[in-house]
Image 1 (cartoon, rainbow, N blue to C red):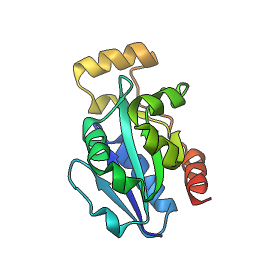
Image 2: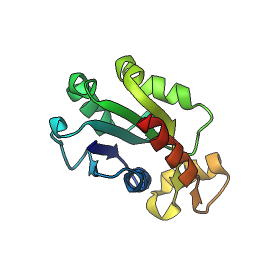
Image 3: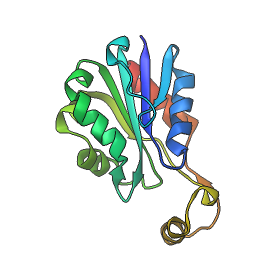
Amino acid sequence: MKTLILYATKHGATRKIAKLIAQEIPDSVVKDVEESDPHLPSYDCVILGSSLMAGQIRKPLKNYIAKHQSELLTKKLGLFLSGLAEEEEEKYFTHNFPPEILQAAATKHILGGIYDPQQCNALEKVVMRIVTKSNSYISTVKSDKIAAFVHELNQ
């Protein structure tokens, strides 16, 4: 099964997660939605991922889904988000994805997030210091979460 992992990222955490997913799925291709508009008929399965910023997915991915929704619905779908706030997972998916896409998805999860102060501007650092109570690098990305996501996708 040829799999496309299409992601949107701001600071690179989602790219890292997409590449970790790809390591678990033979014959998968990883693409940044801002750099590519992949030919969907070439793929049997599509995994869509985005970082969350203030509860919102990245606009390029949102636009891609709107443009290609009917074709995406003919594929096996997986959805993932990257972010540190995992407690309201269902709310983030419901707020950011069309109901048809959510219903068609074989799996959907927040797979953790990364806060790297070196990647952030001054305002982002202030906000993250308030939210995380930390000035240091934080990663909640776990290989077991990614393995479970891939397992659910393959069922």
